[in-house]
Image (cartoon, rainbow, N blue to C red; front, side, top):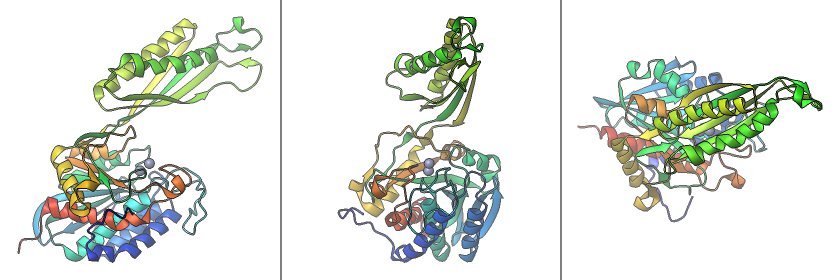
Amino acid sequence: MNTTILPRIPPAVAALGEAMRGWRHHLHAHPETAFEEVQTSAYVAELLKSFGIEVHTGIAKTGVVGVIPGKAPGPWVGLRADLDALDIPEANDFDHRSRHPGKMHACGHDGHTAMLLGAARYLAETRDFTGTVAVIFQPAEENEGGGRAMVEDGLFERFPIESVYGLHNWPGLEAGRFAIRAGAQMASYDIFEITLEGQGAHAAMPHLGRDSMVAAGQLVGALQTIASRDTNPLDSVVVSVTQIHGGDTWNVLPQSAVLRGTVRAFSPEVQNLVERRINEIAQGIAATFGIAARVRYERRYPPTVNAAEPARLAAAAATALVGEAAVDTSPGPAMVAEDFAFLQQARPGAYIWLGAGPGRLGCLLHNPGYDFNDEILTLGASYWVEVVRRVLGEAKS
Ligand SMILES: [Zn+2]
Ligand SMILES: [Zn+2]
């Protein structure tokens, strides 16, 4: 951790540091992906029970919610962590490396889970607040929208949570720093698939077929004009083609080609515009080459938008721990996406980045050499404790 930042960690949270590290390493060694977090979920549920917390399991398949009432009744606040790992073969060889081939915790959700477990234990022991804390451990943050599944499975009907808070470790931001902005902090996440249907032919006699490959090549370039010509230059948007599939051999023009990719934006208006233009450009290119185009466009995650009051409370909680100079309240938004956005659509919420330093050997999120920075475990847990103190207040005696 940066030596100029001296976080005010409550001694009782600092004392949980070794335990959190142990849980984190166990989780890291046993990664599970979207909606298959069976062992992870059972591990979390057992620990919560051992802290004397009422536990609800099986929400959105593998989600877990722990309910911690304070010393007096009052409002409910939700603190959320994510349980899932990624389909990445781990490149590390340290002791807690993944035991599950092809899967690893490359986004630090093992650390998020350990930090929230630490906070839960502290909060269950002290209960020094007016109201109830729901600790939410959701499945399938990566790609599959476990956050949406939790909301659809009645998260907010079963637990009368009034506001929600989320946190992500952020390599590249100095360890010990926090960053949060009111408004859009992360982008929407849409996907598209374009099938170009031509007419297969001998590659030496292209005039006897309709070539889907040349059309695919033109389409990749043309799609880039959406960001440069169609959207307002002041609106951030990314259109990335990430896959091109077509053809099996040297001397055949394939019948069809498939392009897939992702779109990132910060508003429904821009999403609508991009979806319309992808369709128009695909149809236009197809017409130019005398072939057919089919477009599938799917909205996966909405933008992550921090409500004003929760964002202010979150920044104040971070400031109480590390001081004003170490909390950035106007970071540039990031084009990555987060399914915490679904919780924020249901209840006002705030999502904060916790600096994780340069990354182990420079490896950032989703890199096969990434590992969560254990040095920030106690700070992350302290953040949760401070959020509860600020949202619910100390118990009135
Ligand atoms: Zn991730
Ligand atoms: Zn993540």
